[in-house]
Length: 637
Image 1 (cartoon, rainbow, N blue to C red):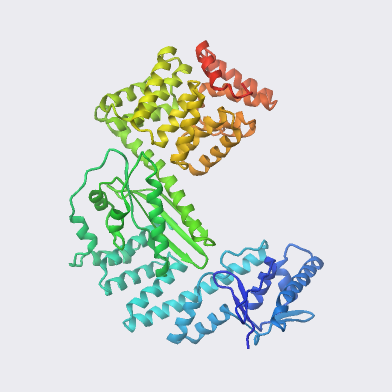
Image 2 (tube, rainbow, N blue to C red):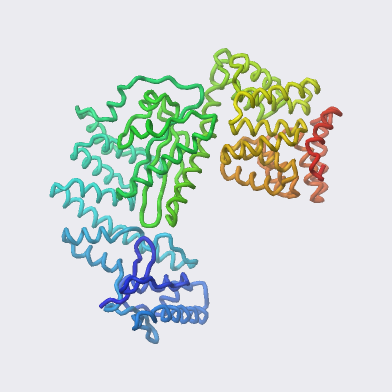
């Protein structure tokens, strides 16, 4: 009778007959036991095991490591009463009468081939061999990859035969579950996607068939950047010809809604592709968390959960969702769980065209499912707003100036400001935006910021700039005191004005309102550093850099300042290395950083470039005084 049960599919676990875990501390001990348990009773030579697990060591050292690992196994097996490990002078094996493994049972059921055995084999195959397991030995990794591939192929053959039997028997529901398990192993099998489409049609659920087509199309696009084959497209066309109108099409009969002024987004329910109905709650949880996180961005109009979930189990066209919910963008995705691993895909789509603007895939271990849910939801919510902003800016730049609304004007001004805050159009566009919409808080906040910065460019008389900066800052806060981005901009503005307490207050408020919004992180980092809290500044910079792959180069100046003030001059310089057409004044800051590192030749070169491109030096006396007042808490200035 077996006294040791070893699980190798979807992870590693060893248990006694009374279901008590056997703890093996070393990875090599688990790897050795895996080799032996693939087929209990099979004899392995010591030399082969040494070559697999200690290929980077000499014979004597490898032999000693093998002896030590065997000793660890014997110690662990002492709880069993008798030792199932059979170690001879030149060979090692496990007693087949005392040990069983899920892999060996799976192989036996697969070889039997009867419908009952195929079902047993399918139930046993819960994931890849040693899923998530790693040993730092090239030879073992190569062996493991080969064995994984072999078992995957065998599992596909088993499940294919089982689903054929289930379809022949008319059990379409079970066949659907089996096909979904096949896709959980390999989602790129287009033939399985077609089988599922046909199965859904056979069960009278055309909407799910269409959704399966879209899932197939999405995964092929994300993983291989290809379109479905002609066979899949033909099947899709046949399904679309069906006369029965599904719920997804009935939804299209609702009244078309106009787009709001803000960028608008609907997050559609993520598709559970795990072949496990119990994972439906996880996919729904991801969707709900993304909706919640995006709702914290005051710059976006986000459709609520109840409206988004009307599309659950449906496959509507992006254009229809856009018209029905009145949104410009759609976020959707899928969740696929296999063993203790989960793959989550997410994408941002332009509703009017169906064009993909952004897509990402997240592979995670499911040690704590709620931590994974929180992490991925936050990452998706952090990525989407920036890509929406870019899409809107590109769209606004296409419009003739006479057709621009207040929002478009602010976008144009911000984009100019990222390149040169001294550009007179920065002010002009913002003033026009406020003429169109006097209650536009974002426009007032940006105008306050541009006026404050104008003391360096001397584009506005100093006294006028200071008065107007304060006026528009107070106006913006009075209109919308709870917008995190506005509070972040006001924090920077008051910092320049020398109002340090107000700068800190708005910085803290911005972080409390949305600690993941990029502009909040990048601006708060600068404020913290200039107010002397260098550690907090660096932490915020690193958070911002992780969250923002589309960062405009102007924010790299923020990064530079934070690292410089903290005394990390190497990192400060790195922040500017990939900035093409560096703004003239930044050469002065680079000169200072190189000088602090005693890299005198480079300091002289940037000093020369600074003087050459900045004939006025540090602008006027009042501008210098303002700058030094802003930096009063730093010993570096």
